[in-house]
Length: 262
Image 1: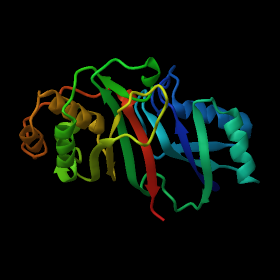
Image 2: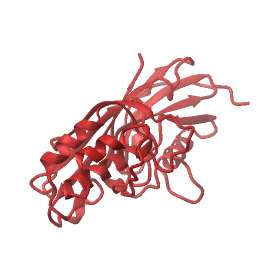
Image 3: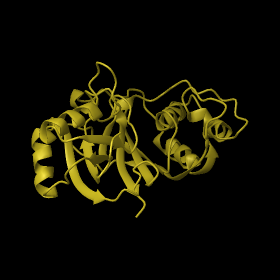
């Protein structure tokens, strides 16, 4: 049986465009796989286990994700030196930001307090191909002001069953979104980005499968004129019969921040 002795929380960021998500999968390149391979190379025969604070889907990126390292036998002698060594050996599209020692009472899943996601997009034209890993381009013009009003409707305590992919009848769908706003993007910039880009900023305790991408999909339909504000209101009711078939592409989604209970 694995005997956990030393516990560390790592904050990491990654570009998800070439990965099949966070979670390990047979014969597929994932973020968790590359992190464990790197740790195995550095730690050698020392036993370890890693557990993520959550998982991101294929092609989804992270400004700040987190995982816990359970280490056998000996602790890390020098955290700063290990951080530098870890980064030296990670692939170039993954970077470790910090390492913090915690005790055995810490639970990286249960102690995850809030998660903030961004969905970045541009509209109305075909833009530089280098934008593809980070943002979604909607070729049709969108009514951005109407989409801003639609985003505000998601904020608060609602039933999000309509916004969970392949929802079952026994899932937890009554959730609270602390922040939901659509604003001009000032978070990430590049000289090949279009002049105007936007982000949907969503913050909450937890989210269902593809929830934010389904929310973004509804807002895109709203901006195109294929959906109304009243339909979004109806979609958030427990008795909703609204069917949402459009899941926004994954590459525009970024896990921006994770906050933990102190």
